[in-house]
Image 1 (cartoon, helix red, strand yellow):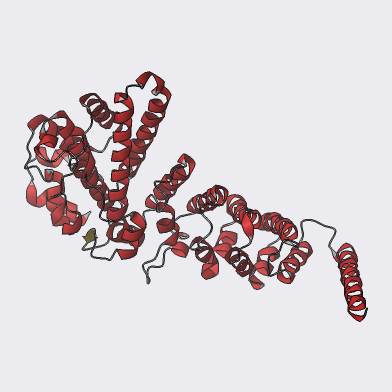
Image 2 (image 1 turned 180 degrees about the vertical axis):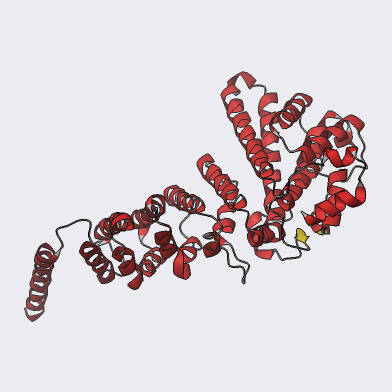
Amino acid sequence: LGRRSELISAAWAMAWQRQKNWISEVLWKPKKPLSLEQLKYQCQVLIRNPVVTEGNRHLLVETLRAIAEILIWGDQNDSRVFDYFLEKNMQTFFIKILMQKCGKYVCVQLLQTLSILFENIRNETSVYYLLSNNHINSIIVLKLDFSDEEILAYYISFLKTLSFKLNKHTIHFFYNEHLRDFPLYTEAIKFFNHSESMVRIAVRTLTLNVYKVGDAAVLDYICNKTAAPYFTNLVWFIGNHVISMDECLLSQAHHLNRNHLEVLVAEHLDHIHYLNDILSLEVWPLAEILTDHLLNRLFIPLYVYSLTDQHQQEDEEKSPHISTTVALFLLSQVFLIFSHPLLTTTLAYYILTGDSSLDLPPVLEDTSQRGHQRKGSYNSSVRAFVPPLANLETSLKNSTAAVGYVPAKPVDVNWRNGIDDSQEEEGGSSTESQSHMKEG
């Protein structure tokens, strides 16, 4: 009986505490939904609920929504809102929530809250506030449950949203030049070959947003540590997609596979347009690495060799090939879509001459005198459609400054492709041309 009395007393105490909390909330919750006082109240709710439970998860979700609305309002109406948000270091509570096994419901809401914040905040100072103290990078590197499609979709959407805020100033909140660490970029490209097309599209958008900022230190890091592994894996992924397209076309049930074939062709054209977009940014070291991989790891060994008996000179399993019809179609798309003169001229020269000794076009050979050194690990001397030595995530972990193309001087982000025709006509050739390229 004594034990039963204690349990009844405890139950009454809990019920009374809940009633007190409800009364307190009604009495003390600010009436204005958008105000500094409301933010203070919502932040206190977050502070009083550090651990996510089944009982408070709905409360936390509503609190996160309210905080996002108040911050967006404060961005345009009351600067004290962001001052208070930073003073209380509220982003640390976001990180603590995500680090818990808080379940999809809360995790998705928090990622959505962060995306909404960065999508809607217009004041540059407010953006700097949110990016300060490295909290966003801490969120980016968290190992969330990416096997859940909804969590991954919101995570990638969040990264893409951040990439639209990149400029010459904000990019240094994401790239640590001292540690040579760029989680926004490296975490995103790990999903370049995800089965969901919207995830792949978001990754491509993010990479283009990073490249076109044109920051020399960031481009130097990308070219030295990530470009070769990324492009090697990307080219292998595209090549296997092409082989799937060829198999679909040659299938005996071709009339049943027409819709699937149309989807495969559309996806392949998306890949080609993305690659052309990278080259169109005219960032010299990046364009050099990508051109090298496209020519020597995809276009020549898989497309062009499929038009000849070159692939028959080795074991068929080691030298994949596609049908002549598909190879001709793909090459026609290359010349229709790509506008990069170095790539198209080199590929056309190889097709028309069949010169197997061709290593680099003259333009690339000239640029060796601009101070760009080639490292053997990713040199074009390997001309074959072969799988990468490791998947992208492993390659990124193992990459060092010695891998890829190491500029001997800062990256020239204003470089333009092609050769100056006027210099050739005037015969001022080599020395003047090379001198001009060095000054560029």
